[in-house]
Length: 255
Length: 268
Image: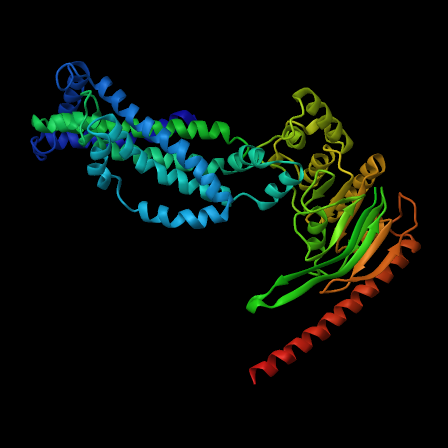
């Protein structure tokens, strides 16, 4: 029953698509500006079977992009998490580093594109670096916040029971901050995925990447494939978030 | 091993760099295996005293000796039960009890065994797999006791551990605590502002004055356990403490009056 009800949530989306198709077919929406859903679907199948540029199929583009996003976000996680824990625990580290963080954070990841190309050249490294920048700060700030929100008594009681710094960080601070850290990861992946297309404008050597694919579709004047590519980005972003939420439910059962 | 508190003194900084004494010239000795209650007007610094004994805070002057060893930082020999239960919410009950053993590298088998024994001591052996959110407040404090006891401390400091429990649960917890104490013979310092609780539990009751807190009165309760809460002996001790506390409250009011006066002068 619940399952049926839940699938009903997508009914309005489906309805909008149907209305869109009707408006397109009746010529109210001009096809050269916004292709109809059916045309987009054609574009999509073409992308999936023949690929764009020919031979470079959609699956490859998806994997190429996912690789960049996940590697960028993974590097952000392994750097921001320990740093955030230390900044959360030691007020002095927090006082010292916060001005740097607050000055670098407002710079949009895209403003880093020229310097990224200068440092890493054109290719995967630059794109991953841009995504890393977008993903780093949400994880950092949420980790700091998570550590700060831990009940001080937990920390004191652990120290009395004999916890040294290692155990304190791994067994008290990290699990205690975990709900917040996961929120940070969710935001980070969201931002990372959003930054992706732009990051891939820095150039893609392998010829694979959704952003790169959309740019190619623009070059050959295929709005249907542009929108199909956009839709794929949306669906994958949504799926990633869903997966993390499932993982979250699993490891935060105790809440 | 006796616990000696020697000439403890602590002040805290108020605004304008002014130092306000919270604890002054506090000295007392708790014999091994004794149950001592500390009572005093609320806000008189009882918690600060307990935190200093545990090593969580340093006194400005004076020292704490456990046997021959001076306490300058938290040690496993001195366990602490906080007002709010300190169960780690992401661990099950049994894994909470195991925590103190796990972090010091006790092998898995052994720590499970010890944790079960500790849970049995507080009669919660059937609740090992529950998460803290799934058990009641009284049960949580029992688990907190097991967590503290499993690392085999010599002393147990308890800071109003039953204050947030309802009256009946509190009475039950007091009895449960006494049972545990009789089995383990730990030295206990139990802070409370509940006179009935102090009289029911303690071998000795140390009454603090209002701020700055000094020892105002020490009463021995030579009544064997289990005690009858309504017995005339217990009542007469209660009355003595209540009178003392009323007198202290009166004193505070006068002192506050004086401060207001001084304040007015400075405004002139």
